[in-house]
Image (cartoon, rainbow, N blue to C red; front, side):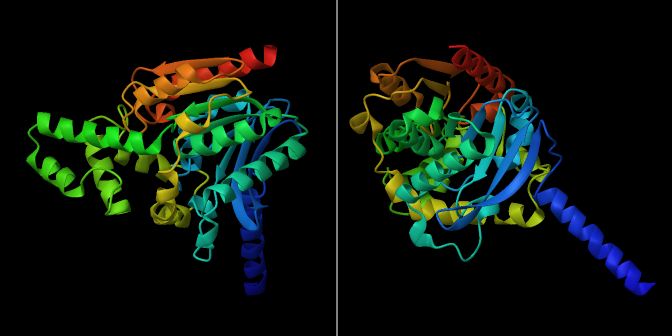
Length: 342
């Protein structure tokens, strides 16, 4: 009897593992699958969900570097699954793709761009599609814009949300905004902390950046309708993240961000990119002072593209998908209908 119980428990564990990892409810016409794929010699996790496999692919490139979207997708993307094959990818070293043996020497822009291209080719083959829709958020907009520039034949349209344009100018404006707000509010503690940090580039590394972001959030330059405790609560409800994934989330973010920040700060599309050969949409929060909207607006005005549109989110900061999830989904559905009809 004891042996039978042991084998029964083992069998249930195997079945549970298979359901949670290989397939979460896929059938012949839909997909709900959490899978580990090898990109650039490193195993990385992707979540693929759709009600209809005839839908076009939407690949989400998350921010950070090292800050995945996957634990929030149940909150901001459920309606998208009726119109897209929604793919969320925890990039190397981030979220579910984090492990202590990750080679930190591979945490560089060119490797991430190579991983992105490899994943696109995997998805095209997996779903028998010629092209896909590509959306980037923050750091993901660097990957997204470079990818759309290099491989326009693979992209239906590019959507940049919290678009990075000129990292150094953006961080400088972000710092100035935060310091001005602290002074206006007579917040002596914030003023002292910010003046101690000094303007970018931050000599204190990630710790200085994190402190600036803390005060920026306090003064409404990052999120409007949502808070960091809200984000933690949403993550805690994620059906796709284990307890270990949640514990590793910030550890992975800090490691990846710290290693890559100097390279991120060198990005300046305003000097290196004048034209893109795919339709371009920018989702821009009216209160975004992480990637300040005024720089995005200026870059958008001069950027040449077959079709382009600036879509303003009047009640959002840097994360329109989390500040205004209903409008975020509405706008993406409009884009897919418009592009696919053409």
